[in-house]
Amino acid sequence: MTLRRNRAGRLSAWPGGRSGGWQIIYTGFILIMLSFFILLTSFASLDSSKITRFASSFSNAVNVLGGGKSIERSTTLLESEMQLLPKKDLVAQLFEQVRTISQEEELDQISLSRSDQGVVMILKDNLLFDSARADLTPAAYPRLKKIARMIDRIPVPVEIGGHTDDRPIHTGAFPSNWELSTARAISVLRRMIEHHGVDPQRLSAVGFSQYQPLAENSSPENQAMNRRVEFVFLVEG
Image (tube, rainbow, N blue to C red; front, side, top):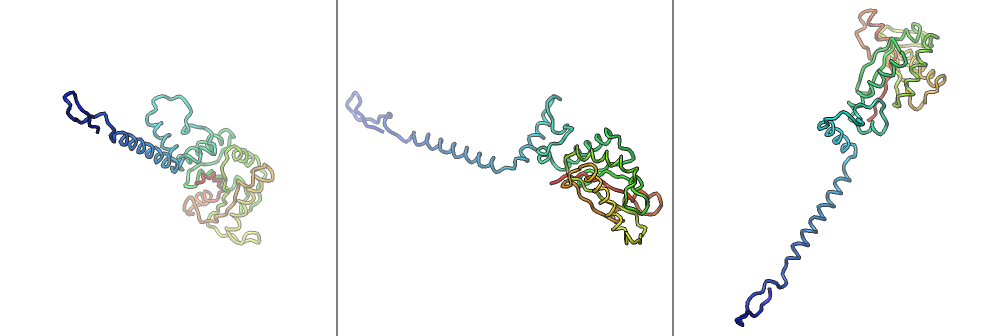
């Protein structure tokens, strides 16, 4: 505030003098810059997958046009896309891949299901083995060749599991169903690697004996259902 003389010669306050207005403007500018950098820091700390999932969900909610690329309708899952989708959606996508490719390979006498681990493809044991044996039959070779091509086309880990019914076995080669189920899984795994060139880093073999039945072992039909080999296409994460 400045004092100046008016026309009558009296002193009066002159509003054009120096004041604190510039401080208010400067303070506001500093606060805006501070808020900007806080937002940048918060975005940098967010999980990118959560941002992508939100964006995908929001896009699906507001989209009224059917065109354009859609992760949800993709026929081939890329590794980067798999890491960004919720696990239940990955299992659904993977199920469709396994189903479609199994049809293209003309695989018959299989059944597909979903699990917490991924997608399960089930073959009855008599399609691959003779009773109480772990050596693959020649009739199993064409079927396993098709499955090997499936595994090559679906870039996820695969667990090969052997299962038996509850009838005990006591032979020199197989003291129990543990040995039989495990030996069968390993026979399939070795065929995949040695004859069809499947990457061994993507495969694993495990025996479950009779302890994961699909049905009660109360009839010959149920026992036959429980004797099986499973290919589990795994969803990681």
